[in-house]
Picture (tube, rainbow, N blue to C red):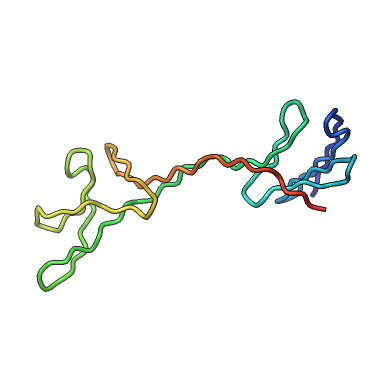
Length: 135
């Protein structure tokens, strides 16, 4: 279902906003040009109703840290992740051993050390771009 809203303003003269399942478009009634945003962006009209922009909200992605495989003479072993083993830090420990390693995060993620399970965090900043003209 597509819903269209018509409004009047000094800058656009008249504009029509249409919102469908995955698409939001704006049309300048004076020029007939349609504006739209790339996937993941929302079309936003400012409060004065004289300009539009495409906005992607800031997000925080998290993943569980993973234990690296540890090479020992003659073998490779997978340690177990122990929560808060060294103070607040989680650690990858070998069974019946004091030998440990830091858990790893994927590229660009940062380790967030907290009481309880640690996590890998990637903060993605808010994005603002100009809408593209679609005819």
